[in-house]
Amino acid sequence: MQEITGFALLCVTSYFTLINPLGLMPVFLTMTSNLDSSSKAKTARKAIIVAFLTLLAFAFTGQFLFKFFGISVDSFRIVGGVIFFIMGMDMLNARLAKMKVNEEDIKEYVSDISITPLAIPMLAGPGAITNSIVLMEDAQDITHKIVLISAIALIFIVTYIVLWAASSISKFIGETGIKIMMKLMGLIVMVIAVEFLFSGLKPIIKSII
Image (cartoon, rainbow, N blue to C red):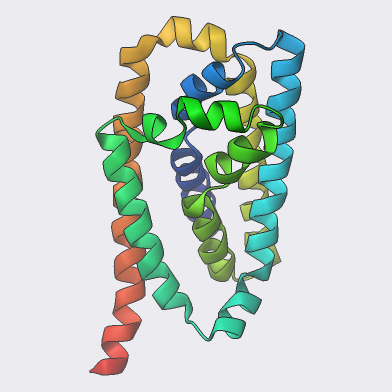
């Protein structure tokens, strides 16, 4: 039971910090500034569904990708750790949201922003995809897999609520509050990155010795 609880906590915290709904909120408001409330909700809902299905697809096909490309889970953990650390550093410097989308991108994707860039790569980005593959590999049985899928679903439900209420939340928290939250989540992502990095390095070092 304790192991399941720990795994569930890891899934929830890692996905929440990597998907970063609070950091995505200002970008979402900018991209949907010309839409009414109903259209904003529809855009957010479609983006959430597409991102959720994308992460599930990568989670369940991860083993086939490993076999096809001849790579090990430990190598993927190391790469994932590096990706997470870079993302965490960007979040710590409160510049992740600014890096993702600029005005030219908004104009380019205005026809269907719910799929690109909202769903992919902003919600289902490299970090979240890597996290899905690695955690699915760590899921030892059906219970762990259910916990993982439930955690992904929970975080996307929370993300939808945040995007749906983005205008109100943004006014309440303010720009300073959003930056503080992003810095805190950046620290958590960097801690997860170190854990992934060392969990991948240990088996490789042991095999070399």
